[in-house]
Image (cartoon, rainbow, N blue to C red; front, side, top):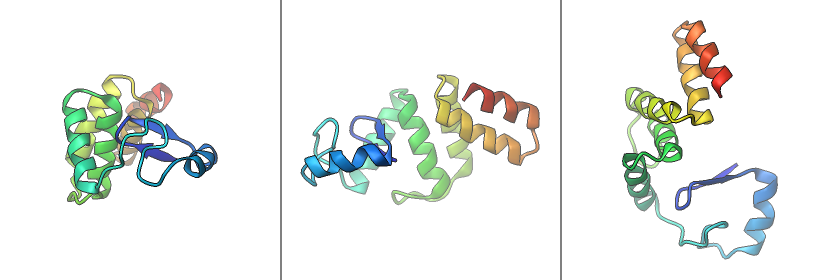
Length: 117
């Protein structure tokens, strides 16, 4: 799947191929905004996450969890961002929190989060 930080849209792989073929290489396939460098993308994500956008909180959490976009791995920060997004009903964040709770052997909470996702 492709995720577009400019507009917060996600497109599955089979759908993104025709979009890539029809778009120029320097614009978003969906909103046609110019694509950003990693530094610009991180700045946009932080701003949108601070504004309370659940998709941005979840995606920024993923970047902290994996240490991508130039970030240092910070699992506590990732969990905090996932929780903020999950509290707004974001299914992907609920799933990631469920995985974290499962790894902690907190199975009841993990099941609750998986069912919510």
